[in-house]
Length: 485
Image (tube, rainbow, N blue to C red; front, side, top):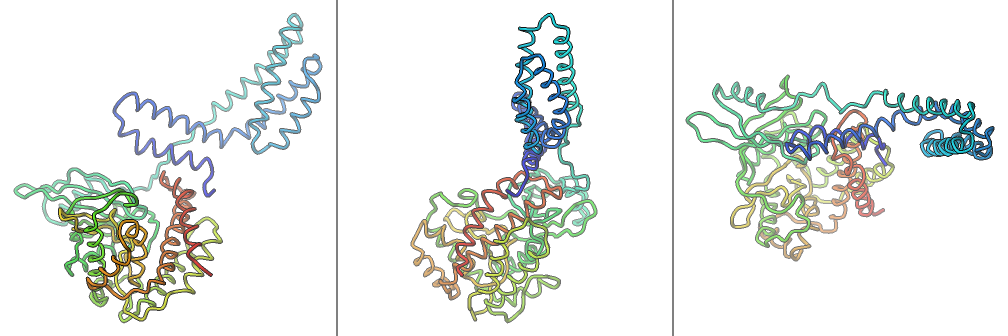
């Protein structure tokens, strides 16, 4: 597949050492984790050095096998077959070497049984012992690989955040507490923390930060632009967390970041909401939220994009906005490192040539709008919508295509669409949803490829294992199936 066995092993070893081991306080699990890390590093060392060292030692081992033939305790044809096998398996000679060890061990036992008083046999046994010992000691002396360390990393820490907030807010006694990173996310990092100042109520806040090498580096995938989008949506009264402060280009932090209020409501469902039961009132609330979002005139976003590379052109139709967006995808796709993929070339070409017709005005889209990005109130209605990094301008059918599968599994899709339209939603060409599914799946399967390709450049993230196998394969198949020629 996309990664080598060695790279898979390194990702697992790094995750165990950096993410899991520091959290283990019980001696039993901690010891097991340490042994597991050692075993993984041993396997990496074998992948790096074992074939070469076996090939280096195999010639002397075969000479020992020839000497056994002269004692009459081994067959010359067996030794010849082993020589041929080493020649055929030079890249992976482990099984041939195991067969050689077996032949020498059997020969040694035969010498003990039949030539115990023969000084030549004793000499052979000594030479065989020296040969085997030299092989194992040479391999043991080979340095073990190290856990991946990014010497240039400048992570955001509670102390750094506290220092920068004190300077920004002119509050020298402000404290940052309960700082915790939230798992998940491929482009941006998310942290929760509490701001504490004497004489004031504690404030729970959310921090959104670009990674040092973001998976996607355009549009609202950049936290600077996600912040601007949230600022506009918040000003329009939409149900989003209120942006607080943006921090750019700090010398001690390896990515821009911003803070928002901690959104109202509670989490519901699992990571993607794929299987759990959900109240119909919540599903209808999704339709109402989308109708509200899609009704915001694009010109209201213009002041928030003074230096944006987002393809926002006032007066664009939905069709024109989608074309610009897909062309932007093509530009980024064609200029970034990735593993070779003719399927990606087909998909991006098809997407550029088959943008659905839609002369209605472009609207702001979320494009990841389901329960894993909601906070819900006590009435099972959306209180806050999170994670706007995939937001852009386009056709409202794209937002609806993303959630159709989830909604249809729980209520009648036509009834959902009717409620969306009755709530002020935009006209939808339902025949275009296959195109927008293909667009979503292309984004996902190309993103998987791009993410995994960064492992070769030093990225150490255990999520890349499933990203490069199961997820990429699934999204590729779905994209190709929807891209009807």
